Image (cartoon, rainbow, N blue to C red; front, top):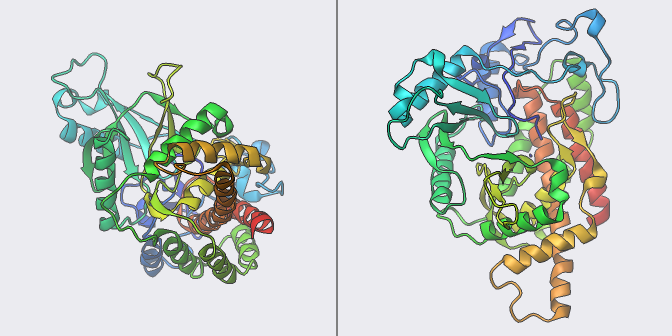
Length: 452
């Protein structure tokens, strides 16, 4: 997804239908926050809101040009270099702010779940700031004021994660919480301090997220491959049938086929996307991948730069500088998808601060040599994968993996392309979702020519 602008602030959106403020609660999210990647609940949110407000209300966008003084207006371009009026109001980049309601709820959660010194100061002294870089949830760093002494061993800083799903299912939240706790227990993820329906409180780990360009650095690529191999080697108490990939694609496709858009700029882009005959293309993709062997392992499913922490407390010479985070998409799935999806993410920079709030660089896709380097590091870590194999057999394994990974990369483009179309309808985040969808499907067809 990876596929969004990052969780770097809150915005007020205006309804295209009425030009009056549209609260996030009107969009099926009672916590009044920006929404990004989510796994489910989109159709329910759409149907609920269309029944109440009509089909156009769910297209939550701010009016173009009205908010921008004439002397500051500029013609924005989409990811394909075309003029795009949708981006005019964002010519100065994203905006960051935390509304009073979010601050109040964050204070209450920290006070009730962390206790200790967190109960010894008033809301006005509460420290909270936006953490940039997440693609699936809203992230905030919450801190005890410096002048307040600790009472016990309570953490002085925590990461507050507020789920980005519009109507996240109870079952998926339970599964994710169980998964998070297990990974924390195995020291593969941050500690868990509190869980509640809207989100959770996690250990804050001094770190920074990787930059897109760093995915290609050999020392970091080596460790990512090792971390992924270890992840794939875990045995987890979840359904081990690989239903996630095409179950998610089919669900997204069903939702896309029900969408209607009101804004002319969206109607035009949506029509162009639907001219790609996506339903038939989905069938073609499934047939191709059914004929492409790939082991079923426990996959992260979203190993992109924003979900990889570079730990700041580690020795510079250490081989353990990275930590994978954000496991909400994790499931038993095909190995080829997890690695192929990671390779796709080499091309997309979601920290770009101008419309459409991502930068697409196709020639950053890993070369054959970079792919082989990653594969060899992965195989050397994955238990038993190289035992008793000759050089010729090993070369064939690597060649087969090249094909496997690059074919499953097609599924990454397809899945996040559909996801982005839906988000263009439902999300109030500042991001060029329609442009991103077109970018991913363009990449899909280019990749298909090479590996299908």
